[in-house]
Length: 140
Ligand code: CMP
Image: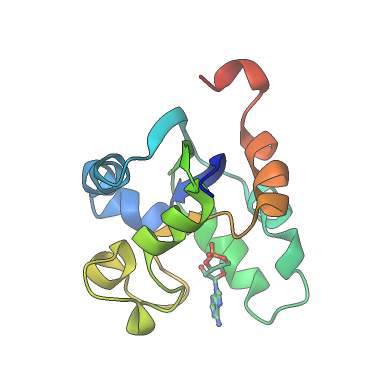
């Protein structure tokens, strides 16, 4: 059964740099997801590291902190039926080489690291990731 969910989405520094914010937002909206919160943030390496703390032991963690703090990002709360899995379908696989045709990552991403967008991978992640960027009164 479909559930109304909220998920955290990030248009990463490469997405902002490539000037595809509007294209990415259009894809979410066309798929029935609603923007419930939005802001632009330029994270420090420490903020980026805190966000990705679950990846702390991974060999790519340092580079990920550097990349995610290399320029501004757009952070969003998306809301809709099955928003978490729907957002992941719209984004495509983490590795753009494996992403289905027509997905955001297949169309715009350069590499597994510079992969344009982030989306919460589960309800458990979403409830931690949303408050990392948004207070309750910023979500509509
Ligand atoms: P994201 O979905 O935001 O979750 C973790 C991020 O780490 C991922 O997208 C990529 O940006 C990055 N990442 C995942 N796997 C690798 C990898 N093997 N090498 C480099 N970066 C990676």
